[in-house]
Length: 359
Image: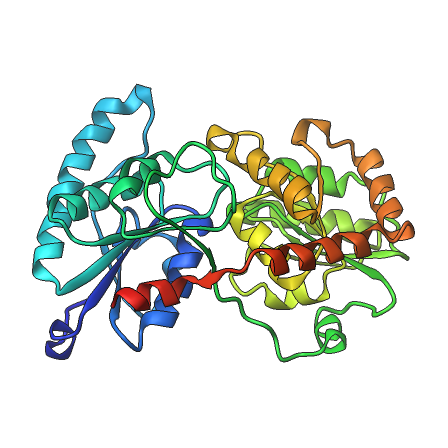
């Protein structure tokens, strides 16, 4: 997409992102809040083919880059060099006010270019364990914007405790349940394994001996090839379930959920707090540096929003009995109270307000 003459005169905030929804959705939310002040520009690897960015109205520009491992070190270095050159050219062409990095190795070339050109930048770090690229650039950031009060493995610069603006639906609980074909008398379980889904979680959930007279499920499977398997399982057992691949507009699902069951990505934990929904946190076992387990432990021990169950300890029958126990013992009310206490104890700034302060 070509720039118009009007946009050349307008300041640009570059949002360096890519990869999973955990990196992209906060960038989209920030763009919405900033678009009346500046022009958001998405910059990163693989943006044009990323399903989460297919409907955005802002410009996006791809640069070269690669995922990192010791096995592909040469490939990563090679593509990162070209990504660095691409990013430098783009920054020099655009009227860049500042850069905001959302983490992942895909962001490395563009963040390095900002540092090289001495363009002010901000870092968004949503996890309990700081990502390696964010660690590398944290010392010279204008602000490191974090979601957790305690961060491991090292942010070196200034930190600000932030929140992302969330949407609340205007629909009533009854209206949402009716639109899903659900009953107002059953308990609603909201299942989600992150933006890319979790095959392990999907299979564990459909193996639970769910009582169709007690529970109904909203289940976001993450991957299209899982939909038929999961949906057929529920239909064969006469369980009311709304099964889709994924949605970036989950406010209706959170609003009717009595219990969340899912992976412990930073976005899910933040949404659980915002909507006041207790959870069974199931950290993905292969997450980088086991950061999801660290997130889940924080949610369980510091926030008090629920219980952590590791993937390899998830026994479908035992977990189902635990769910029954949580409802019958009124433990969910206790978790909701703890969430409210945590929010009152730790006041947060809006992410977009911090960027606007600089602008």
